[in-house]
Image (cartoon, rainbow, N blue to C red; front, side, top):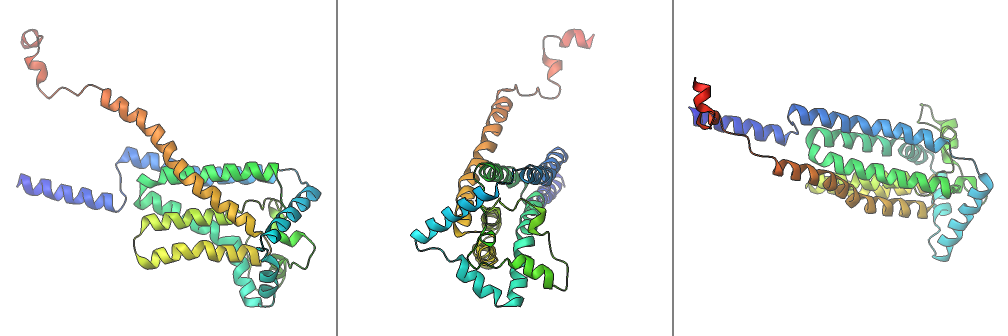
Length: 284
């Protein structure tokens, strides 16, 4: 009977770990990890919106980015934007994707990590925080105007769709720092989400979606004239650098704890006091 109970308890424990359930103390800590992300996102937006508006400087940097892309024969923003502007329904989908999908997917995956893989939450969360901090530093030091803010025939499809859409869309560009284009956090978050999906599932169709998601997002941000190609490339590069950094931060914090646990003396077995030097006095 005892063996059966032990086996059943082990099965329940394995099933709980499979579904992401952890003991009370660990779950409490995981709640803190989960709520830390939206709180830091709010702080990030607040700081980002405080960046000084240097329109002329940002437009000059935008022309520098465009000239650099042209030198490599990679300047495709205008052709994509012109094509998408002639397809109204696709423009609506692309604008909706640009404004909503990257944030929704990222936060859903954070919740999924908390629920199913709390062991991966901390390092991946650290990577997400690190890439946002790096992007914030670049936004402040090197503002870049997106294509829609430069002359040359670019169509601001966000404004066009917002005026024509029969349903409410997301936040307009006027509500955020419009010069925070380089790097693209849309692409940075999309690449982060792609890596998370790849690690969470081995199913072919899920991994296919993981690979397609950053590409679709890249099309959306470029064709709506909200980002340069270089913005997306830099965003992806920062994410790929920060992902292993997040794991190193986790390990550096975990190693001293593990060492302390290993150095702690093992607890005495039950009843050991009775056999010690003070057992005689205790029995009296």
